[in-house]
Length: 379
Image 1 (tube, rainbow, N blue to C red):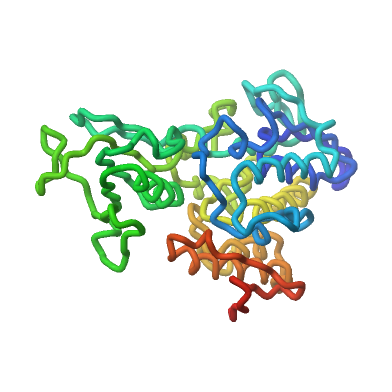
Image 2: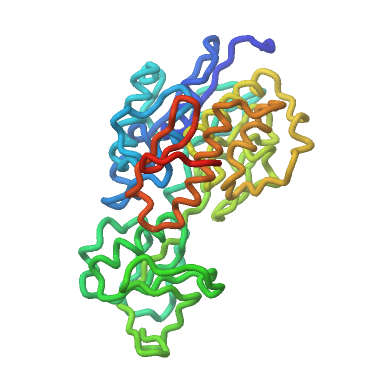
């Protein structure tokens, strides 16, 4: 196999990460994407979405760089609109002919490549996502109902209840507010709430640093809890990989950074894990990761990542998303397209400090400037 010769590649998973890996494959690569259900990954039903789920990023910054959302899309699309967008992406780039709808059971190293079930491939891209296996540790002794956010769909079952919501990530924020529209009261729990500076989004929601219940499911001030919703995230799991190919971090929430180069590449040649970090702008992030993957698959030399310009927090990129993408592609300067996305993303983090941020209308001008409710934003 020459530096730009034919290559047979398996992509495992047909969500946002797997689709862009397939779309960006070079013309002379023979690629098969394995998807056990349908394209769209976590955005497709049934899945972990609650009924009212909308994105917490404006669609302009969330979209793939080469495929915008429809112009009439709301600023913060509903999850069904994101699922449709991914289906349209696959259709637009003629990806369906390269998708094999089957569940991969086994991936093992074999000679200079890999056996995916019984078929040989030169390289493998793992894109199975990390919103399936829940991180859920029920509180012992609690007599009421406990559930993970994955099973929350709407607030109606919690009407007139006292509900505790654990966690203040994206799902914790949304579910605390949603449950509060039906519950008698909600205690929203996260250790950071003990520091101060956070206020409750709804009158019947109170913020607490911890939850301590007695044998009657009651707090020291007499509040009796009926239901606990654990918004505690998901575990990384790769059930199809052999033990030799596992990147580490099995059963954990953290990216196994010590076993991956640039949060992306296995130390085993031509094995990559796309879309692992969190708090990212997922579709452009995975798009740029895909570009880096294909470059390395044809010239496996990871030494360019020996000296990152800063220490990235692989688990939560936050404002470093596009700084990372620039580093990943080894670009001396951040291109304009990346820069305006970074600016909009960072300002979006400011917008999200208002719990009602989805009521704001976001527009992006042709020169990359941002308008919020028609007013220009200065970055």
